[in-house]
Image (cartoon, rainbow, N blue to C red; front, side):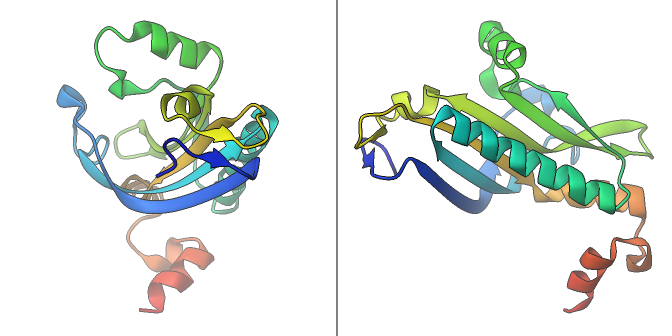
Length: 178
């Protein structure tokens, strides 16, 4: 929706919730890689420093939340699997410059990890591709944080069980209202 526009503000945040659709071929496996899933996304546009500040803030916020909930998690540098065959250079660039982090939660029954959120710095790639600029003529960058709701619920059940009494009190209170 911003294609070809000049933005007046150099610090903009958007949020959206939608169904995300991906075709990752052989990578689809149960809840680990769904072809359609619910995603909350926070998108930020601004200076390079602003984008990195917001990406770091969203990562730190989620780490604090999972620490409070006593969830086993880790943060890893990642590359996008949907670049496809022949995109090794894109993935290597993304990983080398730490442009994408994933927050992963532990699945004890599988003795494995599942990515539930990604924290991305697009640099100026997205704004150049879509012709988005600043009215002031300054440099514009973008980034985003995306949360996968189904994966997060799967990991919560995996670590905390099916009894709401064993869940974090904030989550238990929300779910018991209905």
